[in-house]
Image 1 (cartoon, one colour):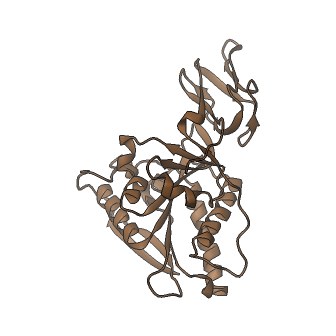
Image 2 (cartoon, helix red, strand yellow; image 1 turned 90 degrees about the vertical axis):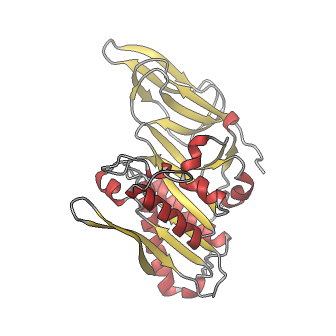
Image 3 (cartoon, helix red, strand yellow; image 1 turned 45 degrees about the horizontal axis):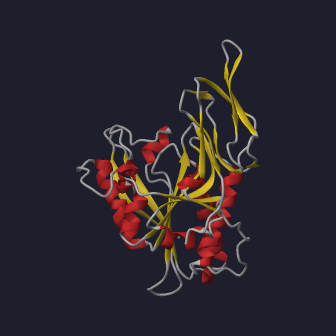
Length: 321
């Protein structure tokens, strides 16, 4: 394994901070297939950081025992926003900017913008395929899923089906995506998958282990990694469009009390939870499934207001190719 600092900078206090890339190189000469894993763009999203640890540990052992298994290159960027990670903050400290909203346009010459640009350039020169790991916010818990912008889906879905996620969700294009890492990589012809899993500031080991098997399978299916024993088989994900997702929202301010768990196949009318008024003891809203389908998002933070998202249900699967 090779270790390289793609960026090094000094904080206002004089501390040197480095953004590290771990590289596992191929036994073959160029050209080879190259896959990169990125985590920590948002400092409060820890699932991907842990997943990069699992991948690095496994690949380091495999490189020692089976160096011939590396037919391509693997590059791991485990902590892109180290100061934000150190404080458990989504945004870059001092500047209070979202590092995943600094690409694809005129974003000035601030330090975060320069580093975001350096990351994009390094990925474009190092990888043909990129997996960018994210987690949900404190309010929601999400099953492992891949989110794809419509227009890129024909090139990305054949990769996404190998990643052992519960869901592949195709979104319509929106201006908000145009400054993100994933969008700009795909626009530059580097296929980028955006994985979302769990909730921020938490680790879900079951989700991480599922994704770990999926990432090994992706490396295997793309021919980057050919070990003596193939990785465990993976599940085929549900394929959904936005029109096939039912969003449940709170009609009241109060506390949401969930009565079910993620990864459940629910039937229309099933009780998913309640919104209660803790002061008066009143039941304000009985939250039921509006359609039969797969529960892939569930409220984690109990405090709610009118319009707060409570759950999402994938109501049917479709052929997106």
